[in-house]
Length: 127
Image 1 (tube, rainbow, N blue to C red):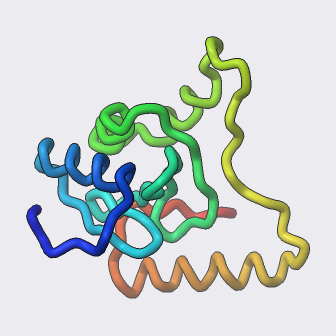
Image 2 (cartoon, rainbow, N blue to C red):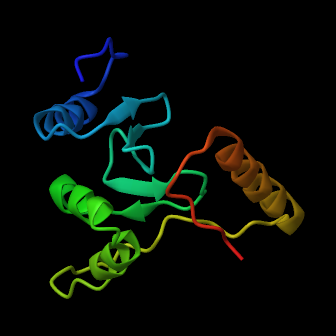
């Protein structure tokens, strides 16, 4: 990819270096690293989300996440990571209860509209 990149932390640099090595299309943004126009990974932690969504999910190993992305098995991957029995503490999807349900629907609608306008794939509608 060898594009002019913003300054990256060591963690983000290592992630970008691996994506370059695997020839995976990505884009570095202030919020995170967009992979293949479908998902975003956090720069400094092991979290990922579908573009256009607010909820983050944990991942354990970038190569497995990318493999699940290309196999169209991200939902299964997220469930699998949640149910690993050798973990002492299971990570739950990083989310929060909205105090204002109207604001939540407004934000989700905004991201859905953005996704449609800009043609970002990988988005799942929350019903």
